[in-house]
Image (cartoon, rainbow, N blue to C red):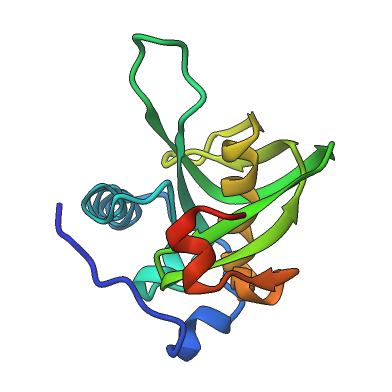
Length: 165
């Protein structure tokens, strides 16, 4: 495994649409493993391949909604698509590619995603709350959409410092 550089909002790669993954091989496995190490080191809850400069449809999301005493875990999504959404949540959102900036974004409270695993097998997974937000945020990256374009408004430094959002 290796740490990869996380691209920031100035990089044109972040605004490009990703191509589907068609080869479920060691190269993909290495990408996913590197992304997991990079995500852990960056203390984030999600990471998309274009954020590390790879224009392929692959994302990682940390499932944080786990019962007490159980560990959070990474969900790998290859060629993901949201097939169901319900409810509404509005709250502060940030991004590893837009460090130190946060904005108010409206997202679904619940989503169901259909995706492939690292071996090409199809599966479905559901997310609530933060996990649903992360699924939406990371899948947006695959279409060249950065959260700042979905913001109702960006938060000021004062609001961020005081937690007023």
